[in-house]
Length: 349
Image (cartoon, rainbow, N blue to C red; front, side, top):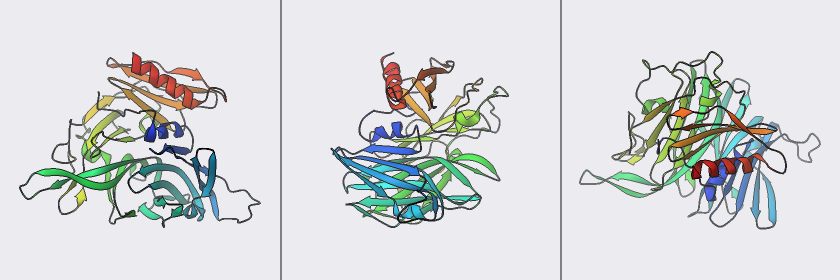
């Protein structure tokens, strides 16, 4: 279980986990700059009205200086929401990835880099029609396993973005993944996308029997984190057909192109541990809504969801799930503080 789910450190980039308790994401750079992206409804009496029903605002905080910046590409018609952040310290570039719903029948993923106070044009990452996308997460790695003349692989510098999200369509629902290569601050095309189920063994004959009132929302929040080696990502995602939670390590390779090899245990010449699967808590029926945060410490993992007055969580430890527990939250003890307390609890047990 140690590598099955994400380990969140409450410093630097992992500050984003706290932003996931609402429709916002937060990131702290190594230099101390705090970036926050959040969706908002444009005021009806705005000096410069826009067509969008929801826009995105980026807040940049350096010490006591705070600036609020409208994301230009989020002013087009429709709704813009669910943004996720990643930051490349070497180029001082912030990447903003978000969901755009131009109408009620479709959605797309848009990516816009922000560097030195300027925005680059947004690029569509995935725009397959008649699909609803949500629960977006973004990760970053800085090297790739490159095929050498002797037939072996060696890590070489490369800036890669990894996105995971939940997708619903007429064919059903599933967790999805996109691999994006960044060269000189610009997104390179084409973009590789996959169903995350491509990277685990078939579950056609496996079924975790759950209570009829089981809340499948627990399974609809895929998560991603960069590995310490900065050459692979660990992805956690649920399967609403088998009621299982899967974990897999993906390591991109570069031969004729940068890509993820497809297949069980794939992700390069040394993919690490094989995919692992965990049965979801069969009696989970809590009325969780909105983002679900995952915390892992050793063999313990926690799923947490913030409501208006409490943060509820369920823990997996010693091969079993606990009942759902709650911590009261308010303006004096917000969800971020409750999550930090839970992390400290599972870290010391």
